[in-house]
Image 1 (cartoon, rainbow, N blue to C red):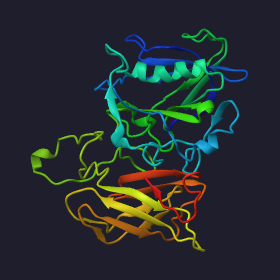
Image 2 (image 1 turned 90 degrees about the horizontal axis):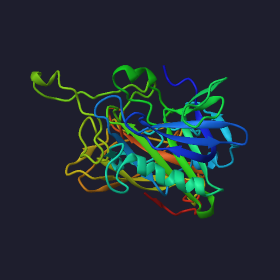
Image 3 (image 1 turned 120 degrees about the horizontal axis):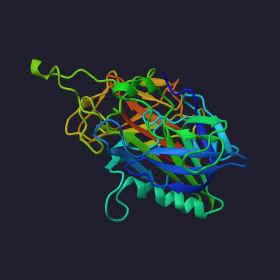
Length: 350
């Protein structure tokens, strides 16, 4: 079953506790106008390998931010669907998965473990009275007459599953779902800065079913002795392969706000590989997951400018663009904001 109480908490961080061996969660105490919450952030995995993949984007920018900034303080339930504020690491084009890296819970030296990566922005937000935190995940509580075991407030109440919540393995497969991923965002209004903290278990795969969020694998060739070999999950920074095609074709530019009437929109694709790639059976998708079939091919190192056709549209107020291969796997995806699309006739570079 997917998460049954998915949403986002908006509030002020007032305290925190680093994770340790006995407590594998980085804990944050957040308050809104009336309520206390504890945010439990996994920084180790119960399934081997224990180290998490992470990405901290200190200049995070995405069209979903426009939907968050005017929301009131407190807990906001979210519908797990495209086009809204619900997060999906794969389908929402929040970041480039190739930028994720593996880090341990703690390690000697400065700024080289997950505790420190998260703590620097939590402490900065605690020291800035205008800063706000947004915790995406699953809510628990309020637990009447129970005291929070970390920060001591009553009643116990908070948010957990602050990580990718699809493509799980083993006993955690039941938590799979789409548009229900967890993350931390920090907003620092004085400097107009947003920071995104994204976490993923190494046991989770990057490609998942569009309805269930379960792991999917494509068929690959090989001798019979390969049949019992478990395919590897997505490797950040790895070269594209049939099961991990990410980055073989890149979206490098788009004409979102055409000066013509009616608007004619274009997306420019780049073949990063050393061989010609046929686009037959491939699709391009927009924010609402409308798809348009692609055709033709792109030779090695060359670009192709594709004119979009309905039902695919690129709204001028911000959106996302995704390329899917013949197996339906995400090859690349980008997002653009209203600010980037404000000049008619200008092309957005990614």
